[in-house]
Image (tube, rainbow, N blue to C red):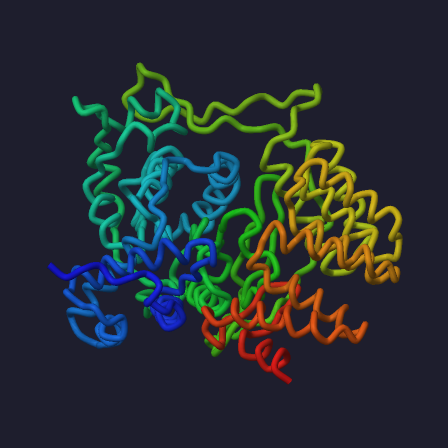
Length: 501
């Protein structure tokens, strides 16, 4: 039996580049050790000792490479999935988006829904259940629901309609009894009528050719972009916008598309979530992106309803053979407790306003946010950023200190505080804060670069050279075109060039 290759001999850079190009996945540095172990296992399974041989295998255009990429996709993607995940968004679908699409399409009696990155199928099946409630005459409609994923193993599981109890943890007991049958092993079997109403397909959002052009009314692509590189996000957004009908909706996870360009999509803000709607003019997204699209921010609507009451999702009666009408909570004049959805909406609104330099609006959103949730760390961070942006450095520092009381290990706060110290000529304080970041995150390249810039201004050549050597060593494991995150905002190759000048 071939011995498992030493992890240290597997240089990750070419694999990271291949994975990003083929799957669109951006592997974070904290997962590099795990990735090396998985790659070593795959080498062993093919009786290979040389990592370059495995790279050649993955680079081929044949059945063997296709099968191997299926295995890697299974090992590298997250299969966490459960029914009616994020009840706020599903309440928005039930009460606003789906009824609107139903009325719009009633003359044709046709509806197309797509769950992109569906994992084990809980999301598209949840959509199918919603439609059985909203469309009593669903048998008279042409309703098409697709679930796609890059992981063939989870799609195979999704097609069975069999789920463990954990996947139903967000489902009301009456809904569970109506749509599921329990079996002895402690799991549940989905109603065949719901199961047969969803079609599952293997599809790569980052590289796949779209099978439909402009024919989908609603796309759910939630908790997918958090794993993607900037280039993959740009390509996927182009694909999704091309798939939507004019006026169709795209729903993503909270804040997933913050700081992203949205070709052909308009932003709508609801208390439960941001929603993106396809423009009526297809030309707005006619050209596929050749590279990551630069950020472009879109103005928010001039309304926000943070006091909207939470809505309980999907209620049925045991005695009925068909789904009962939705059981909505009556509106009340008494104040409602804040919901996570409201907090997320206010936070998103504040972030976008801050990026657009609309500081008056940002301050108003942050005041509402912190009134609802005084211990919200993100609210403290944005408030500190706002004060720093307008030159209120003393207040900004106070907000930084308050934020650190909530999250003492947050390097984002230390970066902001170091920027404030630099701006106010408190150089020693800036050094202390940057060293604190390096202590907390020894592989934080941006901190080394910021610290060496200070020493360079002070003509401390030896310290600059020492920091350069550390930074270059950290960069060695990354591909040259890898985009380094803020505050660097440059590629690995560009930073290497600066450090070696």
